[in-house]
Image: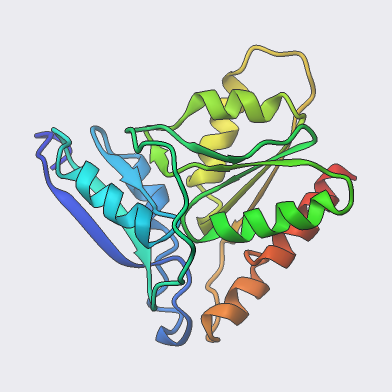
Length: 219
């Protein structure tokens, strides 16, 4: 598919943490291995509304694409006015000067909740819904770097996924300003059996975990 640049859409179920399906079924490696493939567009929706938009976009692309989405029922959210879906472009969901939280898929809404909690501590966090790990929005990496503190949150391995893409982009920036980067995601070990909520808490991928990681990064 990649070699021939075929217009095939991979719809990948059970992305991230799968709860009671057990440790054999976690989908926490796909952002990493798909990001390595030439010609691929790799997406993860924040919610059901974005899932529909990504499917519609994928059907217009000239080459292969992958959309990864989690196990379980849809979490109902109020329909929000989103920026138009454009290949490789992230969505800035919240402006902030002190810290940038770059999130994708299931971590986007917890990141927004964490940012609201940070605001109560007089910490204003920018939140970006990255949408794509490939192509990657280098514009957002540059905006994030201006804060000096960048937190990347994903329900994927920290090896080669969103965190890897963020680090690559920031390393490529021409700046003398020190930038601290921290990744929240799955480690280099299996995630044991539990329900999805417990697993997200264990891996600090819920709003409380992102809030705590942001404060630690700033300190």
